[in-house]
Image (cartoon, rainbow, N blue to C red; front, side, top):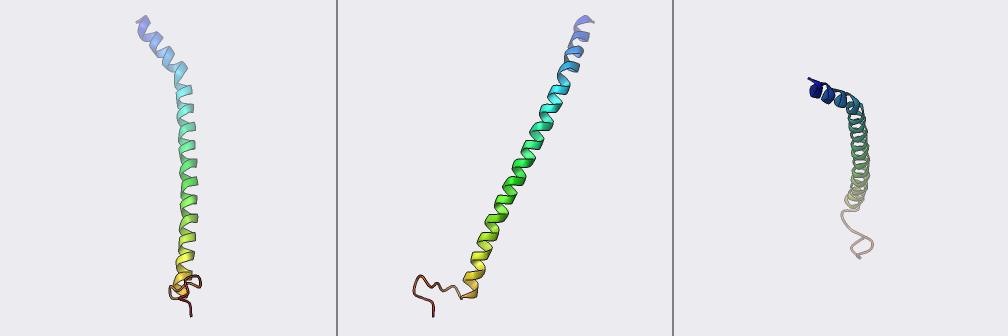
Length: 68
């Protein structure tokens, strides 16, 4: 019975530390995910803006001599 009680005392001592570490890790992963989503949104906006310009001028570019 003494070993069982000692094991539960150890669990009670460590559990708050483990729970805090898990919450910190979840917050870090969530922040990384939000950061990555923001990066992808910016990349998508940039590509979309470039695509709209290309569509507006019929795909011709002033730099390649095909513009009228």
